[in-house]
Length: 381
Image (tube, rainbow, N blue to C red; front, side, top):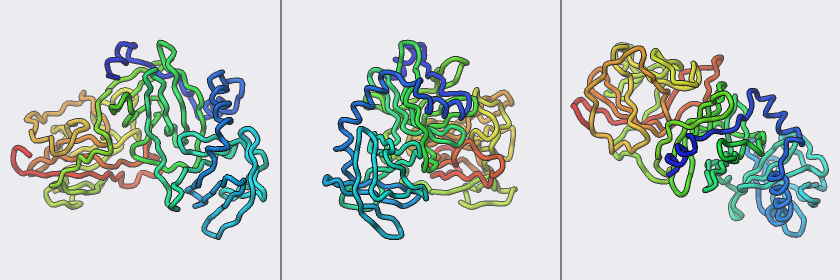
C-alpha cells in the first residue's frame, strides 16, 4: 500500500522544482542540467519516432489537425481549409515542406520534437498536439493521470505552477524524489483536477495511480525536499458515485439556499464561498490558494469533511457543530463530500468542480463551485 510505503520511507520527499518560474525555465534551457537518464530516453525516443509520428494530431487553441502518413506526406487542416506537403525526420528533428504555421508562428526547419503519452511536443515553441483516433476528427481527452511505479518513479504529465504549466518526472534516490525532464507546456486549459504547486511550493495531487489503486496526497516543502501528508484512498473516476436523488447546483459568493434550491437573500443564505478562512489556515495555504465555504453564524462549523466517498454512503449527521477560532480548516476539495448545518435543516454535498487555483486577486468574480446535494429537514439522510 502506497501509504505504508511512504511512511516507511520517511513519509517521502520531492526534490525542489524551483523557487520561481524563472528557475524552472532556466533548468529547462540549460543542457548542462541533463543527466544520463535523459540522454537514454532521448535516444530510445529517436529510434521509434518515425513510427510513432504516423497518426493524426490535434492542436486545440488553433483548431489545427496534422496528419502524418507513412509515405512522408502530411495533411494540415484548420478552419480556413487544408493543404498538403512533405515532412522529413532527422534524429528527433522535423522539417515541413512547405512550412506550416501554428498559432501564427511559422515552424522553422529542423524543429526538435518529442512524443510521449500520445502527446507530440514541438520545441522551443512548446506547441503540443494530442493524438486523435484515425476515424474521427474529434479531439481525444489528453491523459494527465499522475502515476507512481513500483520503483516510486512519479510521472506528472501536467502541473500548474503560478499559472504556468509544466510536466515533470520524479526519481526516488533512496531518501527523496529528484525532479527531471521538467518541461514547459503551452496551450493547456485549466482544470479542476490538475496538480497545483502553490507559491510556498506545496504540491496538491487530487489523484495518483499506484499499483492499481488511487490516492490523493499533499506534499509540503520543508526547506530542502517535499514530505507527504493526507494520503487518502480515492475512487476510480470511471466509477459512477453520483446519487440518483441528488440535485446539481452551482453557487458562489452570492450564497445558496439548499431547501429552496436557489440563490437567496442574505436572510436565507445557508452557505457561500470565500477565498479566505475565518479560522486557522493549514500549513502552506493563504488567501486565494483555495475556495472555502462559510455560513451565516461563526459559532457553527461551516462544513464537516466526510472525505472522498460516494454521496449515498453518507447517512449520519454529526451532532457537534461548535466552532473555534483555532480550528484548522482546509479549502474545499474536489470529489469530497461535506455536511453542513443549514438554517432549516442539513445538507450533504459533493464537490464536482472548483475554479482554477490559485484565484486571481484582480479577477475574483463570484467564485462559483458545482455540487450535487441532498437536503433534509430531519436528523439523518
